[in-house]
Image (cartoon, rainbow, N blue to C red):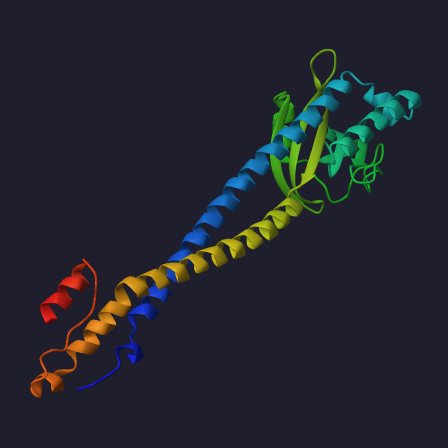
Length: 267
């Protein structure tokens, strides 16, 4: 019975190529995922350090501020001086928001002192002096740290202002009583989308590189193993020559591998 090895359904070369490509895909996805998770974690740490440092600087600057006078629109010159300083910090460190508020526990709300958008230096909507944003309530974690007189802490929040990494610090008066809360936000959604885009490009490049490597490996395997096996198979199928008494048919495979040994045995 005659048949062509290269035309068989389960070609060794085809199986090898599919196997190599599958392995490359798995390795590529695994490496890209681990790199993404590691980078995201590192970025979160960086954002945490930036936001907590900014909030702590503002809290130290506002030490023992006359909150009641600001709410009564007194000490306007002093208030504007602090407002400009808060604006400069927000824009210098490219924060999404930088804000200061006083918690109103009786009404479960926050009362704004300062609120600046880092991108343009404008006042945050509904966050002007004395305003209370309708859709915002006191965060339990923030209030707990505030009441425990924590100097600084970091939270990851997702609300109407976006998915942000927020660094908080407590403003104290001269008697070491907490009087206000400083919050500094960095847009985490933007960074996640940017990271996802960068890693998608990296994954495609990595996949193409691995596929090219697979083709090269397949070429080497085909030259070293598959072609000699095909030659050996083709010669061993020529049984009609042996039946006709032609016994000088030889296989020319110069190899010191197992395939070469098989060719010698046939010869």
